[in-house]
Image 1 (cartoon, one colour):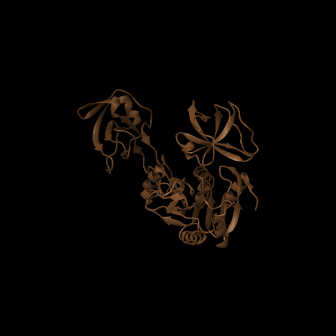
Image 2: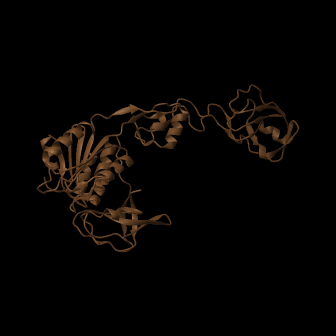
Image 3: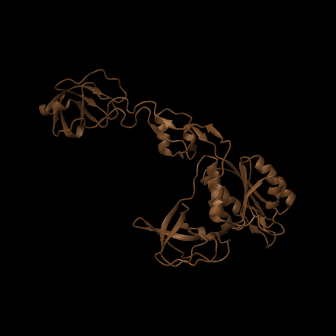
Length: 401
């Protein structure tokens, strides 16, 4: 299986179908960030009756010409007022109160002076002023939130107003995270020789999974031993929807992940993509379970996780989420170095609503320079057919925040 064009690998991701989506009902306040698995439809009008939008006095609009009106009663919010507004009278009414029968307009308290049991009208208002009509917010039968919406605070507020206690949502996929390499040290582990390096990939991937809607299962690091890798992968995939590994998918003598995936009977969707950073990427599936093998270098694994793992997570929630791509203007030249799709760390700034990019402080070198992603960083996107770019050229960037 040869190395794929990057666009072809994205097409494979796009065409993945999950056979059995997992759904569950969750208590409303625990659904933030989940994908809705049902349409939310209003089962009543909001408001159900004409309602006051301000503190003031409910009146008949035609009585404004009288200039003085008697106050017949008070109408607090939440009360069931039986009094009606009759000619020459008004009822003191508060924000959220039902408008009394007979009233068609609310004159705010700022427009009147209270004189004993009367109001003096200092400034008139149009007919129907500050009266919320039936169904102003929404009408019975309106589809308010569509299935597939990522729930945010406003969605929670609307569902609360509809008394939806436990909406149906797509469950977040469980993502097991495993870094391979005998040279890797865990957090807090003591270095015993100079060849050992501190692992960062598994922690970056855990953060990415959390940020983009998955439930991470942190498995840490294991050495380059085929049987150990086989046992760990078998155990990990049995309790997760996606297993993402870093390292072990290249062509070295100790790169065993690719062999183990085949031994476990997984169908390899692709192995190797013409992309920089990355290239040695492997995606395999068996039923609704996936193994995504990413490169070992930190910058490579981070970028390829954003490109491949993020949309794969969204697939389990019946979504096609991708990292947002926008246009930007180059503030300095960009040298195209490879005949591959490239994703290059760049600095972003915004001027008059437009994005601009530069490379100040970004280092050139291997795919291990994770620090290039610190700060206000985006990824400059160039296809394998693109050439170098000049100052002022418009380019595509992926927004990481």
